[in-house]
Amino acid sequence: MDLGQFSLSRRNFLGLSAATAGALALSACGSSGPGQASSGGATYWFLSGEPQQDIRQGAVDAFNKKNSDHQIKTTTFQNDAYKTKIKTALGAGQGPTIIWGWGGGGLKSWVDAGQVEDLTSWFGSNGDVKDRLFPSSFGPATIDGKIYAMPAETVQPIVLFYNKKLFDQVGAQPPQSWGDIMALVPKFNAAGIAPFSLAGQSRWTNMMWLEFAFDRVGGSEVFQAVFDGEANAWSNPASIQGLTMIQDLVKANGFINGFESIVADQNADQALLYTDKAAMMLHGSWTYASMKTDGGDFVTGGNLGWMNFPPVEGGTGDPSDTVGNPGQYLSINAKASDEQKDLAKKFFSEGVLQDAEVKAWIDTGGVPIVNGSDSQLKSSDDADFLTFVYDTASKAKVFAQSWDQALSPTAAESLLDNIAKLFQLSITPQQFADSMNQVIGK
Image 1 (cartoon, helix red, strand yellow):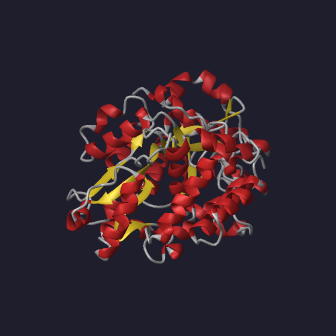
Image 2 (cartoon, rainbow, N blue to C red; image 1 turned 135 degrees about the horizontal axis):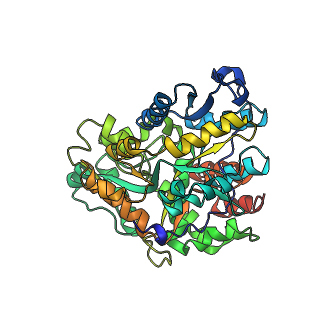
Image 3 (cartoon, one colour; image 1 turned 135 degrees about the vertical axis):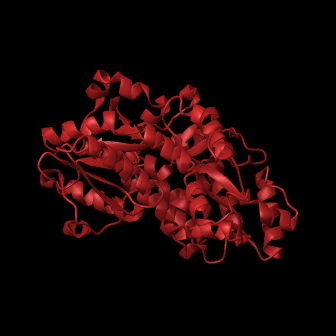
């Protein structure tokens, strides 16, 4: 797998989506910080939700089985709650030994606060661990030339999914351009079908639309300027055009009625696609697995279609570009004891992405970030989708990290707030740009 073709131009960017204010009581989680782990053990916090949760737990269980005297204790959280919880816990010196994360700006904030361990020398002396993984996956793990996280799990580009049955029902073809998207909107609405499903209350789901609109209109350099801290970068004409396009789609009733109140954590947006309520959905490749699990015969019956986001007429963006997650990331709490740190590193080398875990990710529609794993994809029941993900990721001119993970916490929270307002049509594209220009570099 030639992942050298990746261009993670945002690898040094700031940012995990900031948690909203208000700390959750540490005791509410029922877990322990590094100093509270059982004797000789370590703690590990990660996201809940199937099928990912079982795979993460399975890797820990397999490791614990081989290390009975040094157990890793896990605690799970839903996505949005976790962002608040981990920020609060680390700030209070009560975080877990092993910290699941998205890399990028969130990781940088932990690095700046001295909360996570520098793993550069460890990777230097454990080259076999590093060489197993996609080189591109180390981009969001690297801050100022040093590695602060172990890349893990799968590559996850954002995908335009569509319901083949509904396209057949209205006699339409998947969109090949932005103009096609806008032309499909009235066609599906006339048939009583929502053109697009969207979990708008989660906000980061809306963000994926902007990521592609900016890229397809003006190329990856439009958002690159934001990350580079260029003054007024959000006011780039391509940005304004992309923002205007999205509001045009909202005004045309492109998204399902009431999208502002739909939450992604419960997969309600996915259900709208596989229950034939919506024709299309822009979402992460990870949703394939949950749609296969929860959607009856929707996926196995061949009713799910997928494609990369189409180009925009007159745009200069490369249509091979994609956005999403080049991997997931595991860091070690700097306040953990030496014994806990050693156990965490042993888990990284002997417990993460071992053969059983690699197979489990493939079985659920994931493409693990392990070199050579592509040879296993073709024998999977999901070979077509996995090959699409592999090709999308490996052939992308630019594989950009999701904006809320790449921006600083301050800028990311402002971004999500302004995105919500943009989709509610309560601010104009220029007002969006003016507001975001105020947090560039913060």
